[in-house]
View 1 (cartoon, rainbow, N blue to C red):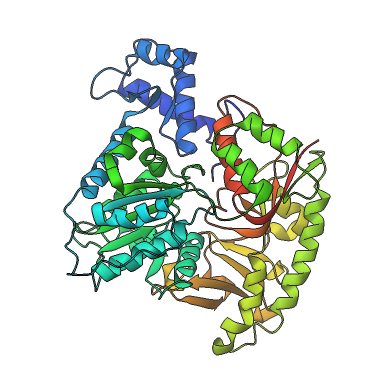
View 2 (spheres, rainbow, N blue to C red; view 1 turned 45 degrees about the horizontal axis):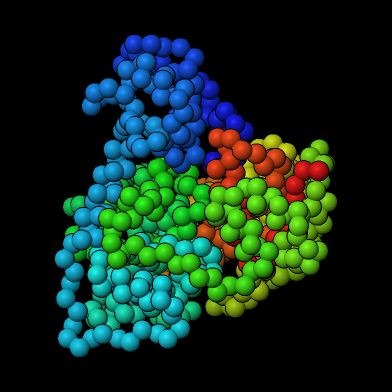
Length: 526
């Protein structure tokens, strides 16, 4: 997973960066070589690791690229794109994806049935009405907005209008992760009949040999809704476009201020840039009005959304005691007492709700486990990185001791766990959260999933059936995308500072803060 990176460092092995640079030198010998060119290669690798394809074009970077000759000719490895510099291969692939989406957006629309033009709900504001009508005018709709702006309600209205105008419409719901897909399915199902809902990997029938859906065997859909678009990388988008039939319309939904995807190529961020958005015409709609009163959470999130780290820091310093966002300074060398206390309380509550779940019949399990899953989604503990002080590993090692890296049989009952791989045969996707239940030979893992038809199910699985499983006392901020909780704790072990890492910091913090529905505790350095 991508982690918060100090300026000028990468989590990729230095040998990889050096090897890539050496391979480029052999394939296209530079006219001028040296530390500046190697540093440029390193920064470009770092950009890929953070989901980006380009780096800011400083005079030093431009000079190194020009001196090398790596900007010259159609076969050159580097390409200028406005005021940024990136890898030609990925940039060209990104522009091909953009071009195909724009072409789809302007494709002829199916004719609605006669006299079918339903009235729009009076609960919609002008922005939402524009979004609902957008699918009447474009075959690809970009629906963007921050938390609480009514994106899900707008999606439901779009679907209702599309079904009324085109009876028998084959509709699918999708998201990049299992958690995000389940949230989308539940939100839509709360306001209408369920629809087929799954991860994009499941829709595309991902397997060890690639995707089962492609141009020769496309998806059997007329409209596909994809939520949490900020998590969609370039490779998955290319696979999606390969599998879409020519007449299938797309409704793409997301928040452009969130983190880029873990894989290379932030497709949603590119689609939200002004030079691209304009090409979609009425199909690009942004929701600004916020309906969810989130107090200080909304205030600081807005500062981060606007890219103002100084204003964000000033707002934090001026927060009143009763605000729904509280800052807790703590020495880095000590594990935060707040986290330990909350975990003990939470584990006790989870354990109390697991009693007898291993003995329930399949018919009883759904109702009996409902309080457990409700509690599971009330709290989130987030870390910006996997290793180091206040990291994911640090949390699990401190709170679980030697059992953190042990077998499932040694984990405590009630422990939240996370599935680390896609296992469609079990109905599980990478990122799905579950709970440990039962003791001894009755040890099981309980997961709540959305079946392919969009219906909620609870599955009780033997540990041996899970290929990859980790404790989920905490999540990295990247893994938490697509999740929300009433109460969130964020561990933040780094100073806020300007520089190349500032943009990544801003997106990390924004994503973390917007996971909280009611309250957030931010643990920072003294």
